[in-house]
Length: 297
Image (tube, rainbow, N blue to C red; front, side):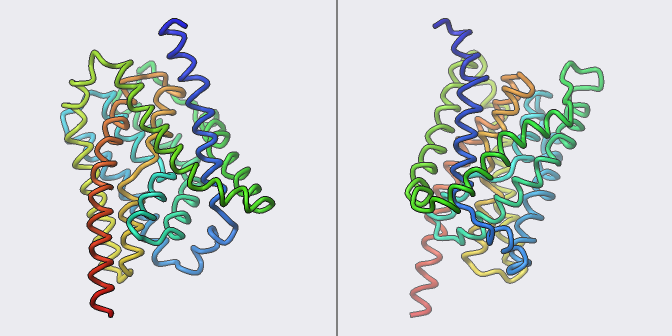
């Protein structure tokens, strides 16, 4: 198979199918109570979603304007901050001993909300960074339909499996999480290969903004939840949820909806950085929980 055909196959078939499966797997971790939990724990969910749906895009937009970025890389920042956390944030929340139920609840609600917010804000971002006469135009309704098919539909199917075949859903959870991380790693390697001529330049240009974005949002997530009196488990969840974005969905939109590899480089570089910082935060939070346990003993 020629390289052009391989790239086309990955962009048009492999990425959409794998993202569909990942989102369906996330749905298999959900039950109706996850959406009702916003009423049971309104403060924790409200703080997390405010960070994720409002502060994160604002910070991303500010950094995209302040940092010396190419327009395509700036749009890549917006693609990243507009996407909710996915299975990756849920996995690292679990590893860090955070409140997994809270993490899953925020991911679920944000996944529904962003179907409607992503097309509108992204359309504005394209005009702002690429120019009003740019070739990149985003049909809002079509984009909403595409996001629905690739997120809400598979999540709903996953929830049905969880409802009627709970043993299948429960036994699949670990596999789905591992598959999500593995596939995201594959995507980064794939993009690095396809864009090998500019990968060093892309890393130099998008690395600093990715690192700043990651550290700032994690810090705001942690301290805002601390200031509002949330416990350590909830603070851990919000920190991970705000700092770990659904890079797979970001890359999908760049490659499939916008057909632009340059726009996918920021999410790809961010992925490398967020895995590193998330690993460090797992150690930090684990140590905090151990100290709290020792003090309580």
